[in-house]
Length: 294
Image (cartoon, rainbow, N blue to C red; front, side):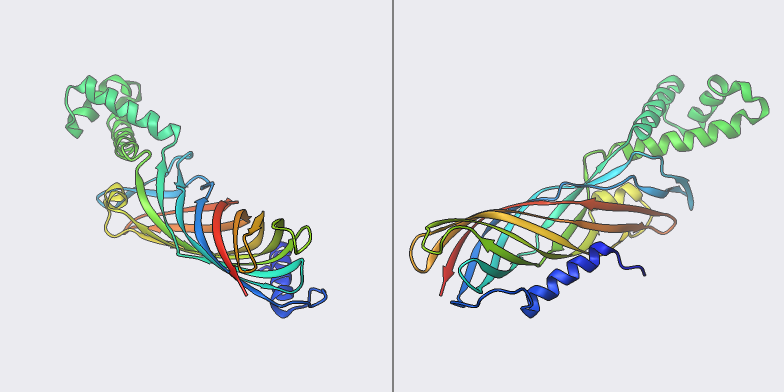
């Protein structure tokens, strides 16, 4: 497996922070423990889902382009441990209660067009019976195919009916993803240590672990036995900025914004089909925390 320059840089920062190789004059080595709330906006919409879709009787059709999965925002509890090396530099490990995000299906134009074609064919046939609808399509839309009209109409009906089925789940939560994302930062605080209000910035390394499961709606969407979803994990550079306000020697409050470079690949399997998709995104995490220093 090739290691990207991006991954090498991330690992270098992690090692430098963890091993204390970043040069600074060690003064008061104090600790700060923080706890609070975070709002996570994944800003994560997958690339197009690729692969096959089950249509019954062990048969599949290719997934048309334009269909994606969107991860929805979620709030959770955050906490961190920060070690101050001097008045300006510190290392901080940010953790949190792993949130579970809803994952919604976003149906593409081809699926919507196929669903519309199915509705029109059913209306024209005056029945939703497959044989009746196929006969209508063969006689009205594909009559120019002559002796092949029946086969062409059957294939078209399969696509239209599948599209109509999938289109029902547009905007529906078809899966859930539980993610844990410990992040290690090297922080720099501006202004003097005696200042009550101090802005800060930090750069570090994020590791994100994903566990994805199908919902009842997702199982019904595929209707092809158990839905099995696997996902790769991610490691990437992270950045944070914010401001600390110190009430007294021990107590403080902070408000911050964090992002990271996250990417992963997802595979969805049923008894007869498989779909693949990928994410490459930079989540926004807004936090409000209370800290205690000693």
